[in-house]
Structures are given as structure tokens and as C-alpha cells.
Amino acid sequence: MESTPVPLASVAVCVVTHDCEADVEPLLRSLAALEHPRLELIVVDSGSTDGTASRLRSAAIALPFVFEEAGENIGFAAGMNRALGLTAADWILALNADARPEPNFLSLLLARAARHPDLAVGAVTGRLRRPARPGEPPRLDACGMYLTMSWRHHDRGSEAIDGGAFREPGRVFGSTGAALLLRRAALDDVAVGGHIFAEEFHSYREDAELAFRLRERGWEILYEPAAGAEHRRVNTPRRRRAMPPHVNYHSLKNRYLLRAYHQGPANFVLTFLPTLLRDLAALAWVLLRERGSLAVYGWLWRHRREILARRRALRARRSAPQRDVDRWFWTRSLPL
Image (cartoon, rainbow, N blue to C red):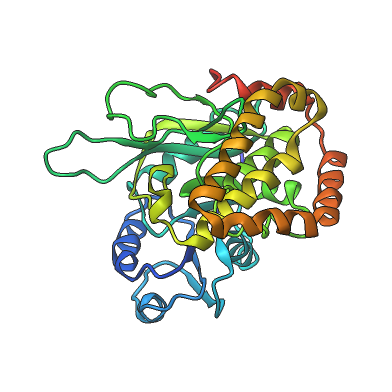
């Protein structure tokens, strides 16, 4: 008897744009080259003040295309939620406008997920590189995400020379949202209050917060080194002084929210000293160099009830043992 063929998974590429006019054409060219027949493009423009929206409205796009303008800068998380509401695809390729996936990027990520039917694969990420610079060796951007004992989250291999490291597939804590394939069933499973991305994470750390929720519900996040993409990356810790004040404000705010939502009692004890030292250093930095971010502490106090209510809702929905999440504070990757 012949077996029934498995339907090819549908994929929606979801992009949130904001003042990235120069990226529109290169992005669309890279998407047109992706090797997957069931593909659609959803773009939400988050209040661009340059020519981004007009370029997208007039672009000739071969893919099924939906474009929505938010009218104001609603942030990546809210913009991505709008994009997700416009598609029923099986998989979501979350992509930054400054990311350039290689033609086989998507097919390799899907193949990696399909190779592990024994795992509840919620997301798959690839090997992201920085654009080449004349006279410099190629450098990595991200090969998955890892956590530290001070509750920092970093991209594996960030800014390292692209040599022989990170060549093995594996399980990672999470991934940057710059180029990340997400299973729609997993996103719906971890949604809270109808929102998949936490919209209070306006700019920065929304990808780490989503990774916590996926992990707390037992979903796996895989790394496929053969799937390559280029990512220019604008926001880095080294450029903090050059970043707009509102971005630094949200970065600091979201750092506290991440812990308030996801830190358990045992983890509090385990990481107490490193996180205390980091908190003191952050406060000193704000007082001495970044006084515009002082308002974060007032915001956290005013919203303490909503923060605690969300924490209770998240903890009530956990299905994975706490130890399965906590081990990522001292584990950078696990083999498949």
C-alpha cells in the first residue's frame, strides 16, 4: 500500500520594519531566492518616518504579500503580534529587515526540525554572520543564545572570527529574533492573554522572554549550523552610548521584567550574588552616565501589580520542571 504524502509545511516570513528604507530592496531579493514553494510574506511597518513604507507599497513582490502600517512606532513585539494575526501558516520565519538568509536557509531549518520527531521542536535557528568588512576576517553574529549566572543573555559566538567553532547541531536555550524559525503550534501554546510576544518588551529582549516561555512549556529550540544568514545588527552592548535614549530605557526595563516573570525561588538563591552585582553596576551606570533611564525604576514600581499578575499567570502555566529551565544558566548547548 502506498503511503499518503505528508503535506508541505506552509511558512510565513514575518518582518517588522522601522526606518529601514535602504534594507527593503536587499531584503526582498533575499526572500525571493528562498527555496520553499509554500511561502508568504507579512510586513508590518512600525511608524517609519523615511521611505520604508512607500517602498514596500510599490515593491514588485512575487510572493503572496500582506502589508500593514501601524501608523506609529509600536515596537517589534507588538508589530510581530500584528503580523502573526495576519497568517495561519504552520511555521513563522521571524526576520529583521537587516537579515539576509541564504537560499537554503529555510529548507535546512525545516529539515532539522523534521529530523527529530521525538522532540517537541518549537523553534530552529541557524548560523548568523556579520557582513564582511574589507581587510577583516569574517565574524559570527549569533549561533543560538545562552544565559549567564547574572541573568544576561548572549548570542553564542557573537563577534568571534568565523572559523571552525559552532559547527555541530544541537539544542540551545534560545535565539535572536533576527532570523528565527518558529512553529506556530508552539507560539499559540505559549501565548498569554492572546499575545505571543510580550508587548511591554517594546525594544530588546523580547526574543529571550519568548525563549523562557517556550522552555517552561517543554518546547525545544534547535541550532542548525548549515543554515546561514547575514545579519548586520545595529544594537550591541558596545554601542550603548550611541543608541537612542528610548532603546536604552527599554533595554534596562526589560532586563528587570525578564527576571520578574521567570526567576524561581531556587534560581534566586543560586544567582543572587551575580545578579546583585550586576544590578548595582546598572544603577551606578544610570546615575552617572544614563540618567534618562532613571525613569525605569518608577515605571517598575507603578506597574508592580501588573508585573506580579503576569508572573503568576506564567508560573501557573509551566509544564516543564524548573530544573530543566535552570540548567541553561550553566549550559551553553546540549547535543542532539
